[in-house]
Image (tube, rainbow, N blue to C red; front, side):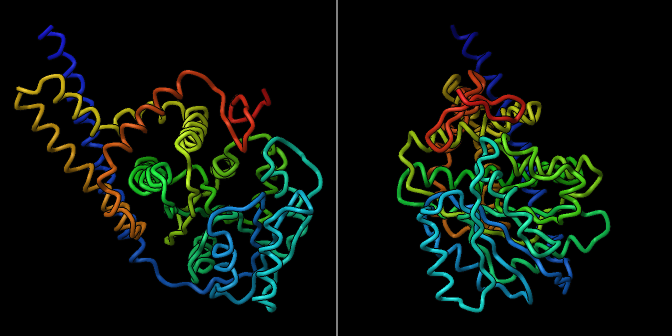
Length: 384
């Protein structure tokens, strides 16, 4: 029994040390990104741009997100809101927005056709021909942006070879535990993983739904939006296909924000599992590599298996220190997240839940989205 527990402790300690190394890489990648951002010169690349926002129902703080798109420091842009149903409740907010900002170029595009299982992309396909300008930005309906958003996001597109720009984002947590855990994960884990991928792969080869900035020309070259109407991770696919076409995908030096709902734990779990299974489906090897990102949990398990061994406590101390440091460096240093210190005590629970989701994700390919269940096959949704 003692020998078996020692073996378990050794295995967990090795995984924890691998996690500690990963957290150190996160710190280096985050500092590198922050340093590069500080050296970025201000550009006045200001082509007219169309912002496309597909709507479906109401999101937390939705009007504040809408409003932020009318306060941008930019000479010429329009915002298109696409809806598939004429009585969508979000339209009342768009109407209110037009009353508050009568000079803003706001348009509603009715998208009556359901072209696939991904309603967002179905709307975008029908919106794109209505966009007046060559430069296109697609972002989720709940995204709140800073005043210099367009200046910072479009700047990389002025560089030769850049075909798409995307952004990191932080979550504004609600009051429930699930909402706080998701916000903490976005700031201390997800964003760190993006920065590590950027550093180790020499750039990123995927997009994030918080922002996709590109051109109509690039979209035509990668086959348009139509082939993505059945894909769950349309943002990932857009970035991957842009990179496969020989273009660079850049990470903008600005951060946007998404307001998270007050999840019940079941809804939080379903949302996280959907994201996890999509990543597993599209980036299988990298997803398996996430086993090391649960280093704090492995270190605790090493101590639990061999509490009298001094080396398990040393592994725990080193891993915990690097985990907390990486969380703060990414969340505060890069994302400027005001919530992270308040909720940092939830980090061990967040990592434990994340490990559970990672394990469960391997036992099936079903996901739940907007109350419906689907099967995931090579990134595509199949109705069950």
